[in-house]
Amino acid sequence: MKHRPIYFAAAFLLLLLICTAYNLSYHYITGNPPSAEKSADHESETIRSAPANAGNPHPVYQYYLTEEQGCVSIYLDDKETLYENTSIRLSSLPDALKTEIQNGKYIRTEKELYDFLENYSS
Image: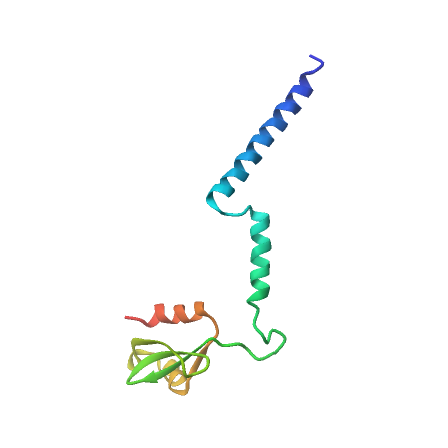
């Protein structure tokens, strides 16, 4: 009876050791690093992909929408590199959006671009 707490502590430590070994072997086999290492990788990736003008108050745009032959065309922010020709007819868009695209509409992120394409593609 005196040694009962010691047995529970030993059993708990053994169980903890087995779970840790299983977790590490699972990550080793699947090629996925444990979450602590993954978050460190994610932080370094975020730092590497930060915009060059992070301190600049002017927004950074990635895409430029314009009208060509009655349809919406997507260019990269340099306005020269074609990203995609769409089948979205300019005449099918709301008037305010139609005017923006005729004047050249900038899109900041890939998510905003795909939201636009989901909303207005037929």
